[in-house]
Amino acid sequence: MTTVDRGTLRPRHVGVVMDGNRRWARLAGLASPSEGHRTGADHIEDLLGWCEARGIDHVSIYVLSADNIRKRSSSEVDFLFGLVARVLPGLVERTGHWNLHVTGDLGLLPADAAAALTRAEARTEGRPGHVTLAIGYDGRADIVAGIREAVRAGAVADGVIEPADITAHLPGGPVKEIDLVVRTSGEQRLSGFFPWQASQAEVHVSPKLWPDFDEADFDLALDQYASARARAGGER
Image (cartoon, rainbow, N blue to C red; front, side):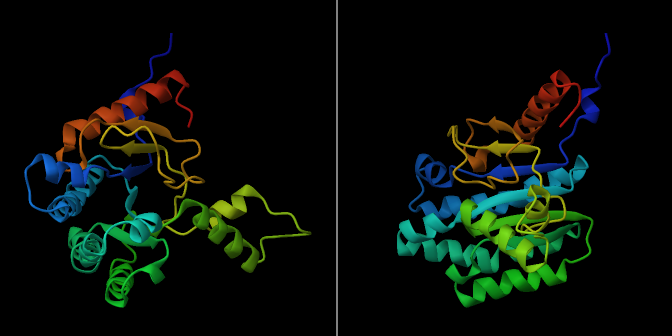
C-alpha cells in the first residue's frame, strides 16, 4: 500500500468566510458589535501570517457582502466602511509579502474606502503572495463579471465560451480555483462565497467564532484537507 505524505498535501489557495464577529462581541459583553468587527479585521493579519509560514500564497477572504451593506444598520455599515478604509489596506501593506486584490462592487463603498483599497492594490503589486478581499461582494455578479470580461477580451468564438475562459477573467489573484474553504462560527453554508472558484473545494466548518479561531484551528482545517486529498490519491 502506498503511503501518502499528508505534509505535502497543502492547499494552494485557501478561502475564508470569517463569520461570528458580532456574536463574539455579544458573548464578550461588549457594548457594540462593531468591537467584534474591529477584532475580526485585525485577526486577518494573523491568518496571513499562518498562511505565509506554511507556504500558502493564495488566500481569498469574505469581508463584506453586497447584501450585508444593504441590510445591516447604517451605523454598523459605516463602522465597517471605516475598517475597509483605515485598517485593511494598511494591514496588508505592512506584511511585506501580500499583493492585495479586491473583488466586489466598490461603487457600494464611500469614495475614501474605495480609493484606499485601490492605492493598496498598486502599492503591493509584484509581491509573491496574493490575497483577495471580497468587499461589496455578490457571487452571481462575480460570475457575470468574468463572462463579460471574457467577451470583452475576445475569448468568445462563434458564440462559444469555455469555462476556462470565464475562470481566467474573474477578478482576484492569478490562481482562481480555491482548494479549501474554511467557514467559522459553525454555520453550514457558504453564503455565496466564490461559487465558481470554490466549486471543487473541500469545506471545513469550524465551531469557533472568527476572533477565537486560532492557529491550531487552522492546522485542523489543513489536516482535514490533507486527509480528503489522501483518500482521493492526492488529486485535487
